[in-house]
Length: 173
Figure (tube, rainbow, N blue to C red):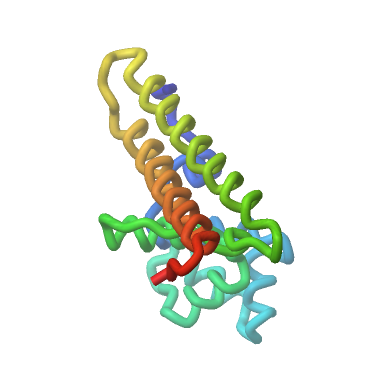
């Protein structure tokens, strides 16, 4: 893996960021007007929300309502990645589309297995690349690998859900 400094955008895609940066990136990337578009959805002032989400503004801070609105509007997984990383020793998965519609159960399970294998493969490639240059995993490589590990954990949860749903007499609880 490269040792060069990554731009904020590259870093936001590559690793799990602190919550404040994840909220900011989710807002900026919101396709319907950015942060101002989110504010309009909830009848708020765009400049106030911009200040609350800005990583360089120290006078305003996002409150729980702001965080909930940004999550609801953007459905950006980076925000949940940040929260789960802060919580520690946990994983999350977006279960929309995991459970089959009608007779599509086998396809759903096959897709879930494919997702697990794909994420595992990406993780193993990341480890190999990290170790290739100096036989060590540095801090930047570790940050990227942690995100891949969390995604692989989430894929396993989705697989469990799909298989459990397809099994007769087995509950999701």
